[in-house]
Amino acid sequence: MTATGAWLENQDPGERKFISIGFLLLENGQTLPDVTIAYQTWGELNSAKDNAILVNHALTGWSDVPGWWPLMVGPGLPFDTDKYFVVCPNVIGGCQGSTGPSSIAPDGKRWGSRFPAITIRDMVNAEIAFTDAIGIERYKLAVGPSLGGMRALEWAVQLPDRVGAICTIGSSAVATGDQIGTASIQIRAIKSDPHFNNGDYYDQEIGPDEGMGIARRIAHLTYRTEAEMDIRFGRQLQGDETGRYAVESYLDHQADKLAKRFDANTYIALTEAMNSHDIGRDRGGVAAALATIKVPVVAVSIDTDRLFPVRLQAEIAELAPVAAPLVTISSPFGHDGFLVEVESVGDVIREALNLAK
Image (cartoon, rainbow, N blue to C red):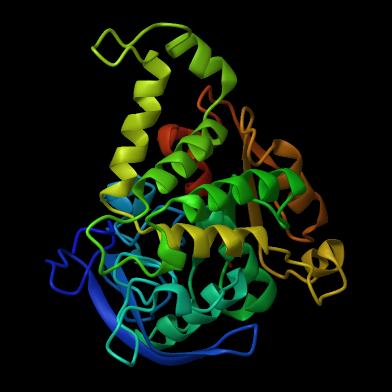
């Protein structure tokens, strides 16, 4: 099967582990049966079971934290495996081993277009069931960037007794119109691909790679900065037979990389979940929801982030009662600064662990 970059059941799982959490009742009233969560861990859970850290990955991340967040996990690193038990589950709707659109449904076929719509709260409810299944009562810290920060914030609002603190990086309390607009164009690009077949492309030779590649190119421009693109590439030509500008070649490379490890249906499912994100939904609004938080909150912004501008993390820091002062990291890399500025981000995570109750 070549129509998807998802991990499939006949492939080597590597360091991934898998656990069943049974069925999951979704926000929309549908039930997702026989849910599997893929996850990885580092370090050891101590006898008191009070040294666990939950890492919530971003949109195209997965359970292998060192694979997407280098220099963060290990002895003496911010997620110090000599001290902490670090846990990272792949989200539901994912494509790297957790139940998602590319997974086998109860009828023996891949879910495809039949996979139900999911929300951030559904993802967190799956993480709660997963946490119960692996025997952890409480995390010292829940931390994540972007989509992961949305989930960490949901943990603080919904489950204050099960986290000692949270750290939300380059994220927000609610999706903005600008984010939804940009994301909706990416989704339209995927669905317009002639090989998309309404999401049922898994038995085809070719999947919607071109559509997802366009989506990734659009997204990547929002992850980086105008200044970086101009300084790094400007109007330079790539200098090969294609006649492309260097920036086009760079974006082509990013699109090709993602196609090799990601599934288009998952890209849509997780993007739509991010679009629906609103910590204040059915809770009296954002301010009312944030006011209920009882654990320390560390909100981190990146000064050049044009996808999640500083004001969105400032809102969290201002309205959460136990929030630390807003931390703003200076970086020329925009939203992707959380991946690049590992020293600065690491210092923040160490401080968040110190604040954890």
